[in-house]
Image 1 (cartoon, one colour):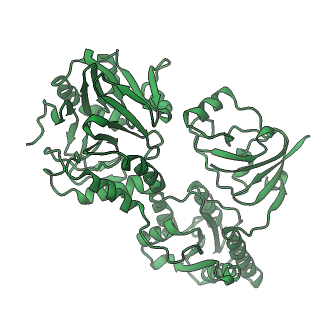
Image 2 (cartoon, helix red, strand yellow; image 1 turned 90 degrees about the horizontal axis):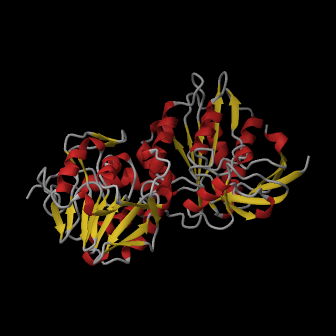
Image 3 (cartoon, one colour; image 1 turned 180 degrees about the vertical axis):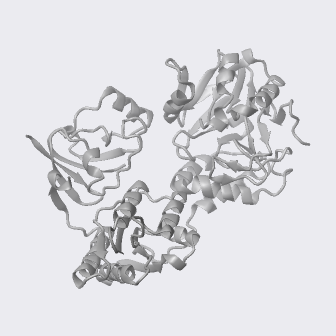
Length: 421
Length: 95
């Protein structure tokens, strides 16, 4: 039965969905396409000593939220407001809810404090910071908190209602899929939306996802109530397993413990290409004992998506680009702008390239690599037009130095700060 | 001027710096993997593990201490945008 606009929908005894449907949304947070809209899920949990509200909705849907809330609870009954995540699509109705239920206490993760300040701009915000192991009683039932940071923001947490086996998961296990039938066994086919949502929001943090799943695996979950998309009452464990599957490498790394270095290049006249070959050759000199696997790719004729998969699994990334009109060439930026979809922290990065006039590309790429959380310990190599033998040797040295860093053999450098100016 | 040595373990670089230098002033220049967000001690993105020499850093301010607590920072971790090196040998790496 479809959800009614002015009525809450019971999802378990004493637990109601009081969210909002947004079927006309076609783009979420700029980065996500939403082919049939989304939902903003909020919930009311009734205990013997009061009511808890878990999350709210986007501000423009506040009226829907309050109508549904009023169908199952009075404002003076609300003792607890839990925010599993403080982005505006979940906190848009919070200021008005606090005005209508001033006695309610806010429960947020420890890392959410700064976000709360940014949202409410109050000097004396009353809230209780919580983490794994903390709980709040509603009399005959208790809400337990799970600290699950970076799924997909630093502040994210889940809330567990043990007596009903309900996990209020925030954005985890959510998706942008709007269907008024609400439940996963009643709505249309949302598998694509589920995977798409994971790929764009959770994949960069897959190590954190696996840590969170360790907490969730220990729970006898009978229903997952996410903050977006269908409520997962039929085989909820299937979605937990799906997250585990999606968090495992897209590509099986056949190199095993061998370190992997990817060299990408673009080359109009073959100059940056010979530099790329020299970088790869230098790295392979160090890796002759089989400790490193070097791969060389022409970025001009490759698809971005499989390269992103490769980079996600690699230990090091070197980019070679000519400088055209004072910039690196577009395919480099296309690749680099796609890398926020994967975790890069701690990988090794470097740049090189031939240029005709000014040669800014190498420095620009290095800055972007640093911005993407890579280590960039070796200064890149630039060559004016056709690289000389000395410049090609510098490329080989760059490759060797990167390989030494990757294999933990880099010699420690000692420098004075003045030399860094 | 008193000097200190700061080693960025993830890139195997040691930098000799004047006392009072903040980690943020050098880590990016040597290509270390410490990442910065707000750069003003609020977001905790630059959380850094002090592998050794913790005692050679200036004591955290009240605000830095609160941010470290709010973010459940483990022992001997500091914000690289705030931590000042006072002397001796300090070894750091990204948290």
